[in-house]
Length: 197
Length: 197
DNA sequence: AAGGGTCCGGGACAGTTGACCTGATGAGCG
DNA sequence: CGCTCATCAGGTCAACTGTCCCGGACCCTT
Image 1: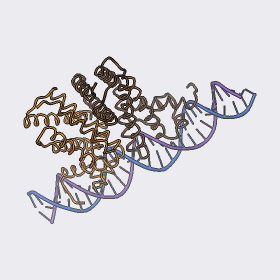
Image 2: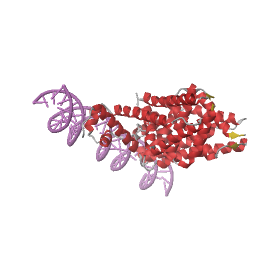
Image 3: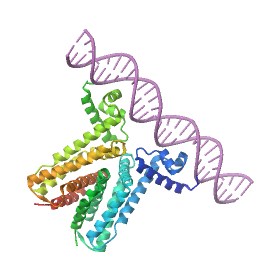
Image 4: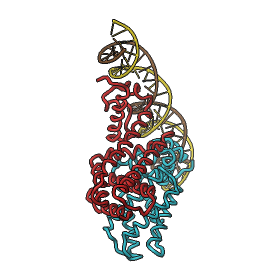
């Protein structure tokens, strides 16, 4: 094995853990399978992390930040508001279809965190970041395109975050891509309707 | 312990498993803890179920049917459509607030089923039933109150199911009951707007 | 070149879990 | 009164998991 500083090894183990968890599920992912996925011995794992929980904490914060980056990336201002919203949803949706396991993992980790004593704050952080993410998007678009909202920004942000979350989970369970054109259209129209240009 | 036929004992063990899983989480629930919760010896468990998986299957179908019953119960026709929708959501929401663990369990079981080889169909069945549930509700209300829909019934049903699911999960993670008045109002208004009286 | 901190490997350990078995006891039904 | 079904206590077993220890290899500094 190539030697590398602990910090980098930690990052490598975190990435390996995400791959292993996305593939096998959180419950089936052991310290041994993570070490194997990273191509290092089990001892290295405990050299870099004091415990498995410490790694899971790293995994949760990493994948949450990653998720936020995905959504932020998806939304770029376009000609009309409706077009912007539609394209943003489409870009997000394309990512979900391309990496379903990774998105499924976010749900698993949420529940793992909620059940693990002392980890509840990580689950809350995850969903608070989702809310803040949509708050930022709304305010950014509001400045760029200029519109008034029918409801308070935090309420809209939370609604959008929750709805996107529910739609994603529903898709991950049921699949059936064709069914989503109508639904995304409905959502887009709704959002566009909530603002008055 | 009182003697009872195997079938009834199975039901009792299933209920005990739901309580134990809702309290401790699916991952921490062992055959021993379920037997203890039901107040029987571990032998009885294996007398009634060939394996733990057989019990989990029973748990998933039971809790899914239970959930469907809850939502069906929540929706009773009222004076106006908007009032009906609002009251239905409120009744459902009251149940979520009263039994958060039970609802959380439905999410855990979905993921358990998706990860357990041979159990994927149970997760799909769960979400298909959600879709059918809302389809029934829409058609029932459509007959009772008489209205036309702006989008296909299956699409609306799936959208409602997914949105409710997402809102519930968001609430279970973040809590903060006060924030939901605005959101439920928005949802209600949206649904009412999707139909033309 | 020598030393020491950093990193890595193999192996061992203790605890838990699901599954299974045995043998015995009781309750209720035909 | 049978005999079957249901229950129980107790223990065994193999597999797996997180954690830890010890020895050795590597690399940078002095």
